[in-house]
Image (cartoon, rainbow, N blue to C red; front, side, top):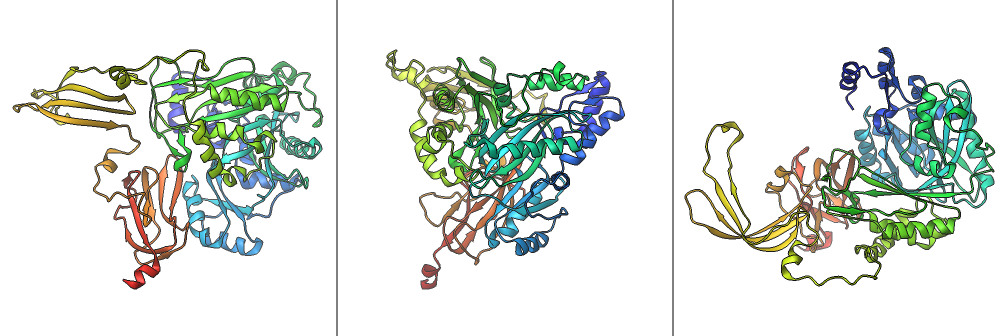
Length: 591
């Protein structure tokens, strides 16, 4: 993310082109402009296109100029809650608030009631790099998220590679993508594709870009959403239905190739003449859907992905190479792409592919994905942008039946019985045995020249070995100058920082109905209530930041705040910490 550092690397190694992938810098006109100043190409639309398309308000103005339908919206970015409040009073609820420079779900909040407006707008502003947002009337009921893949040569020639549907999202981040859309009447897709092409031609778009819309298949209404002027994470399913490597084509276009030379020759351009293939991308993420999709940090011990005709897996995981999920990057660890000739075949293939997918060592969304593709609504192609939220509890309950690791031999090979010794080692990436011992030298970093007397640790009995996720053993521990002492050691991996783990903040009890407990670890942004406040069910109590997202911790009940955490803003806090105690008002009145 450091442009100055990237410039130094480019100069040091005489690099003449940079591909920004699909991270935040891929939409940065500043990066493209500064690289151009030293005659280095950033593969993509270029700074002028990025100025018109990367900023959501500028992209909206382009849509209006091209007579593409848009929703009522603020016409100027703002960092003030009261400006959004006035807009809501004018157009009514629901309203969507978006960071003008967001991406990947960052800085987006849906406001359904006025009570939540101040906190939700503040969260969106906080997640915006420029601290600026805009608001627009929300189109939610019955609408699908439909996006058009555009490619331009920079001199006015523009092609479309048909549409993708990305309605199944959590926190406004896609987890299941389809190409083409499952909308039965493709005639309602035609004006959407035409609108995207019209906008791209207007600015002589260069390279790859995705033009996003909301579409109601029943009414044929559609509205422009935004432009992602870059390669998309879900470009894989467009490649699958078009049989074109669009990343290679993007690189060739950057070198001055024509559409034919880049590999796009022969692709029909009638919006009604879509390819006779279907493709689904399933994003495997290191998240816990039962804990508000909190990041699952830890070491991946093992993994297994599907293979076969029409199955592609994109991942950075390599067998035999250690892989650790940290909080520094996006939570996607793999993409499973399945392709078939009919919708029925592709749904069956997706179910089988996920049955052959497993990741051990961290929590993932695999069980939830299995529940999604197994749902009758998905099989019928009837999922709109609100479907995942509406069916979330049902899907979580169903995912419990899909959470067991699949049998890789499909019942054809009988499992071998486990004795106590290999039970303790099952699933572990490290073998530990009784009487294993270590001499441990501990010295302060400031005293590196000292000669510490070693400690000694010996395993008396291995009780459980799922290292590094968890490990339990009886040990003999000997400190310098003392006799051996027996301990029961129980270790569990955690995403919590050392300062949060060692803090003295009170822990909550999930069995106590008055306790509001932190569902995730992270950094405390702010506490939104005071002792003595009366809160309603689902009122926000505090805000915790994890990765790029700020997550509100809400009260599960109405009542009176009788106790509040003393944790400070910007302090590391641990999952399970007690945030507040909410007592029934009537019970307090009797006291």
